[in-house]
Length: 219
Image 1: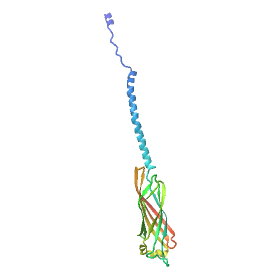
Image 2: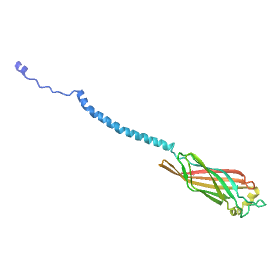
Image 3: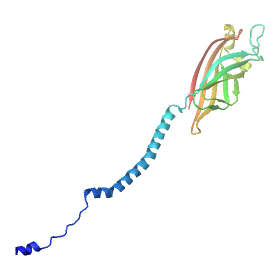
């Protein structure tokens, strides 16, 4: 009985793959998956960095800044007075305004026709229009605006006699410069620069005594 049990053949051994062989079979799939992730991640990271760079440039370098308009001075020409130092009804009188426009942007500022209106005691007594132009990036341009005064409206003012007696005349002007700033043909902003000025000058010497201006920019 014992001999029969000893003579029984043993069951064949089942060969199982080792853990190393199993890992080696999965290794190519893992490597391919990692390469795919890297290939997808690199373009995404590049796009993200580019987007961040564009946003930073928009809020720093490419940010549209307000153009600055300045009244440098006013000169009176063609002022004709009578022997009694009074302004004749049909007399000629002109004002030449020296105006500058400063463009602080990295792109040029193109403006259309400029308009300057002259007022005396709240009544418009003259108007002038300037040609369109362009202010280069971070540059300042200057222009002379000549306004022919309608003397009939000046003389007919009830305050004109009082101003003649004091020897001083105060006039106010309103200038409007519409235009646009375009950066890299991508960012476009329409800008309107406005300026109100009040100028007091000596009637006999035509010298400017006092001048004050208020600027306003509409985007």
